[in-house]
Image 1 (cartoon, one colour):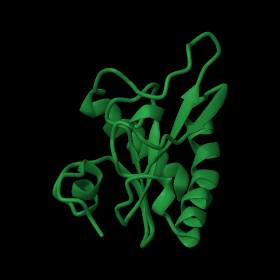
Image 2 (image 1 turned 120 degrees about the vertical axis):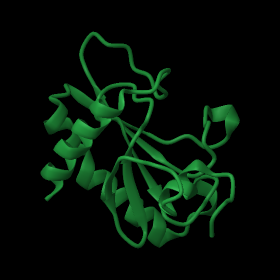
Image 3 (image 1 turned 30 degrees about the vertical axis):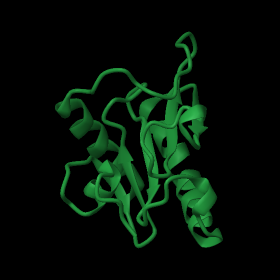
Image 4 (image 1 turned 90 degrees about the vertical axis):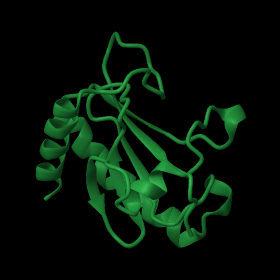
Length: 138
């Protein structure tokens, strides 16, 4: 199941670029192109779901397991003081891309918490962070 106009479905299909950290039959982990902070990653299901309400239990489990696996690695690699794990459902809740996704956001003392970044990161910065996180995932 995919959505023709969905950027995440395009990345999954290889029709749009993405800094992919991990992929299996159920989930993909990738860097956010407009990160709140360096290392801001997203975990998405391979099958298109607009939000959490249509996911089945195995999909929810696979997404949660990858959050559990990736979160401490992002925190360690970025040197973050904490790590926010956020998920939004519907425009009223702040969702801006309508393919279910979980944000893993490195947080630092003295920096205000946000869920959405405002400007795209430099490609070289995303390349470097993706390489560091992929190495740590091995």
